[in-house]
Image (tube, rainbow, N blue to C red):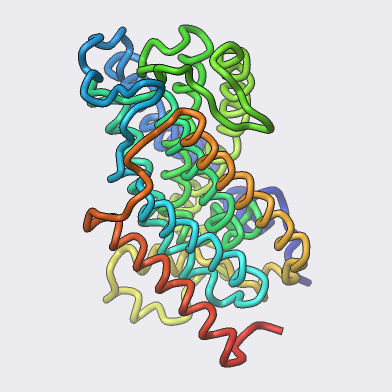
Length: 355
């Protein structure tokens, strides 16, 4: 009989955990929790003590101020960057329901963009240089839109976050960006635009409609609470991820998780071994393929909302200098996105779509 699915992980996980002695169970839980909360706690402490946190010098943004807007950062969200990301979103919308084998490739390729966006947000938060509130909102919108559209469909179910090799990178990335997002919205709700510069004509962004500077703090409370609630899922996933590694170290790994070629695994690199260990086999889980239409509809809604939110936020804040493709970085991002889309269309053209 196939093991039943439980929340996040299947029954074999808990069977291996139960086989541990009482002291080992406590040690496993403590170590896993510590490995999860220590980096999150350090990041939260750094944000609370060393991020912007003070009224910026009124002259620091003088060279970027315009009449009612400001000059944007084309290296972070210029036209080439945005188009490259949008093209990857479009490729993901096509590949997720029709080319299931390409989901891993899509997720792996987009992981680089997600990591770059996460680093950009951290740099804007810690560099104490000129950064506008609307810029942070734009980058966060692109990051979370892409995560939901490209990364999560590959994971498919919450169980996969803790039991696939991609979780080794995806869980820490989400686990780091949720506190950053919560910190940004909470500071905005409590103190207004204290940490980042306001748009000269008033900061506006798109949620379900236009949110102007008059309602910015009220809506920020909603966003902060939402981020704090969503922190529960990756935290629990990270704890389970650490517990899985502990079970393997303690010799209580379920037989379904064991690699078929253990001799070869000894010679491989540690990341390859971890990926084989964490990989969830569909025949063990008894998973049925996800229905395509709900995936297409949800993906289309996420992509549409994210693109509309980013582009309207740029327009409403009169951001200039982000509607041309001149820098090398923008060209590279655009070419990468175009190449991924062409590959997906080529696979469809040659009849490799999944049934």
